[in-house]
Image 1 (tube, rainbow, N blue to C red):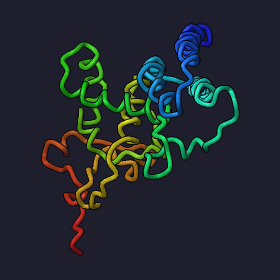
Image 2: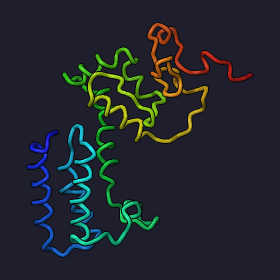
Image 3: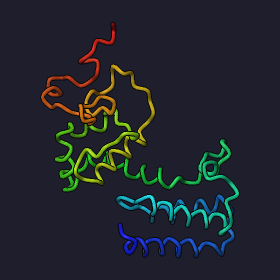
Image 4: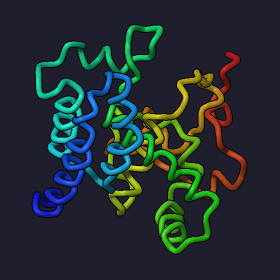
Length: 205
């Protein structure tokens, strides 16, 4: 989004927080205000790093009354037992919201879901959300930038449960690529039951 489009949004967030400054809230109270009133206003389809940095600056300026931070930002976002105050990490918050689109795409019959379903067809449809996708070497795999962001956010937010190599999905695997460095999917193989790495390699030897 352009600076012209972002300016009214940023001004609205500042106005919202300004109205709360007179209440002399505690840190926990301020964080509650940010979570309930300010964070929902920040959601954009594809926020860039400059926008996220600007929002972080506004939030921490509100939190510390325009003074230097008194608690390190990587600490204040931690849970109470870990010495934090459960301040929301704005970038992860936005990733989390995008990750929820995975379920919307699966269970919705909306026009946008059907559009994205068509784009995912060559990747096995919603199989993409079972694959071993790494955010470290993530590449654009579908035409829609927003759909790419959903897939990347899902990969970032999914549980870190360790899946045995033999049980990992072969297709769209970030560590198994073609000569040009891209993951792949063969629908005719998948339809014949070839889904996991154990289907092409004997891990017992």
